[in-house]
Length: 443
Image (cartoon, rainbow, N blue to C red; front, side):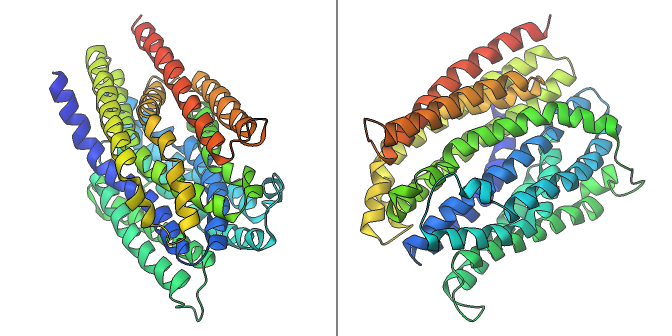
């Protein structure tokens, strides 16, 4: 039975992994392209990309409530109700687009957190302004993404993600580096590519809901409903803590680029590269976490506690094992990975010096990721949010600032050391909370 659970999670996780890698691959492509334009452009995408990812995935976190809510309904045999959750998720996505766009158009309160070179700030502002045009499409697609994962339909997401990655790479290379618009656009070219792909993937999702198997089964665009506060309240009660948790966790890594801006473009560029590699590695446990959330959610909806426990154990084992192996690969193979990003020897030196930290925290990142997602399946989101706020902002950002700029003066390494410590503490606390919740849930 346990092996069956493992096989089920692997079957779901693999296409999710490909879809997630395709999504993060767009960031990797931008970093690799701009690494061959110059350190200023790379520093701009490090700061601008960090802000964009934090804002977008805070809003996406709210919409991720679609996954556990739909999974519970499917497990309980209330399949007909799932399409209403999807429709209301789309309405909520459009509403959330408004603050998302506003933040990207007027980012002064974020850019004011740390001084930076004038040339970098100019490029960051332009980058964010272009990206604002793609926010509605991104949020609508992520609602569809959460719905599909709840149903275990990840192959479609994989196909859309891979197609989007190919188009994004083609456009980024041509616009940012080769001057298709008359002159190389640098970071602005990457932003135009990102927005274009956001609308293309949103359109692909809409077409699949009209003409694909999901469309035939759920008829999402028939009998369209007005916004329903009852379902919105359910989504927001579960999703708001998830959105805050997303923002806290992501900002503890991506907004570091703002805090270390005084260290210069070279350090920012090296940090951006190692952050990209860490994000790629994170896709492995995240894929297993998403698959485990859906499987446990459906099991809980069916009130099959034993099956839920098997999927939980399988998810932790698979994610922890694969991530530990990835840490070993990073330790021995970092130099050729970094060489793919840039020809700048100084930037490469900074990036290579940080590998020890991401190699160490792979296992702990896997445990805290799976535990945090499975707690969502149990509809527990507030306490995990508090835990993540404490460890990622308190230990990760606060401790990182002290190690970087305080008496120890460790530089950028201080932030990465604090990040490793924060992930270790998050793994311990969230795993303990999950054990208690799972034990008490059946009572």
